Structure formats: structure tokens, C-alpha cells
Image (cartoon, rainbow, N blue to C red; front, side):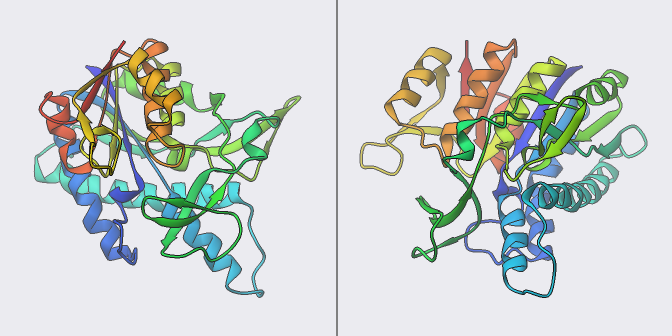
Length: 303
């Protein structure tokens, strides 16, 4: 079977305007996970996911009191890998039971760490939004996004997914659904034979593409809060795209059509994946994952 990577955006768990309660997150997860469970009949599947709202909430909790020690970002990312991995696993278990695949399919959350370059310019220019969106600017270190003002942190490029061999082996066994690269992975730098965590959040779509490159995945599907990629997004002359070549996507990126804080990393991830040998790639909404794979929804990219 082909290997499919499904990269779930933050809205898979917390939708815009929601408080982000545990009940809301479990309810929202049901939409993508029910589709993924059905796709498990025909694909070997890796689920990756964002963690912007969750890691942002942990940062807020730390800032709200002086009575607890402060954990660095890399530790918070590790915490969210366990938190969200549990939520995906438990929802997936229920959905596989509904369709009678619970005895055929096994699943596992892989704690994933990712090498980054300590000299990456992202450390001097934070751009990755985390946490809730505010209607007005509340502090320094925030940027204006389509949803409001959000805190930003460094987001260096992923160089290597360390657990790629383990993940590839599980894919080769054929019965596993793997949850990996949560929140883009735990960012680490390598000095000699030692690895050290660093204060950053890696973009989960870029990490997903890197993982796809390393394990030679066939398909990358990025699920977000819009069905199709658009030119002139939010403007009177907005144009939704059904197909987009890699060369066209690169040109639109240069023109600034896809902002760094939203669609930019997704399109860049697609480009990286296809250039590294991926066979099929698409961006679509959380509720149309299955339709996009059947070529009935989403923006499809080709090399």
C-alpha cells in the first residue's frame, strides 16, 4: 500500500473562537480521525499535527504564576506530543472499532525530535504564531495574522527527523498507523555526539515533508481550515486554485501570495516534498480529507 502522511492543522483540535476545552478538542478531532480510520484500509498512514494553541496555552499558564519553574519551549513541545498523541490515539481507537478494523490496525505515538541549525536565521527573526489570537496587540513579540494578534517564536528549518528509521520500519510492517512529528517535532541541535534542545517551534508541515523525504512516502496531504489555496486571499479578486505546479507555487511564494504565518510554510512543504521524490501532494480542509484523496476537493500540486 502507498504511504500517506496526513498533516493536521491546529484547527483539527481547536477552532477559531473556541475556548479550547478538552471536550471541544475531542469533538473536533472526530472529523479528521473518522476519515483517516476509513483510509487505513487502503493506505499506510502517518498522522502529524500542529500544537500552536496547546503550546501557547502552556506558555500562558507558566506566565500566569511565579510559583512554578518555567519549562523551555522544547519541553513544552514534548508535553504536547504526549497530550495530543493521547487524544488522537483514543479517538482513532473508537473510530477503528466502529468499522471493524481495530483488530487489524495498530497505532503508536512516536516521540519525535528534529535537528535544526543553531545558525538558522529564524532564531533572530521569530515568525511562528503560537497561542490564542487577540483582537488587539497585547505585548511585544506579536504579529498580526488573519485571525488577530498572536505571539511568535523562532521557527527554524528541519534538517533531519531522528526517528525516521523506526517510523519507516513500522510503515513497512503494514498494519501500523503512526502519530509523529507532533508540533513539528522537538527541536534539537547536535554538538559532537550530543543533542541539546533549543527554544523554538518547528513548522509541522515542513517537518512532515522532511519525514516524507526520509522515509520515501508517496503522498502528503496537508489539512487546514480552508478547502483550497487561494491567490489574493481575502480580497475582492480572490481566486481559488484546484491545481498548481511546483514552478507556479514557487513564483507565487516569491510574490508574497502565501504569507509566512499561514499558507506560506504549507506551500513550501509541498514543494519540498515533491522535489524530494514525493508522488502526490495536496492541501485541503479538515473535513474533506477523503474527498481530496479522491480528487474531489482541495488544491492538488504537481511537479
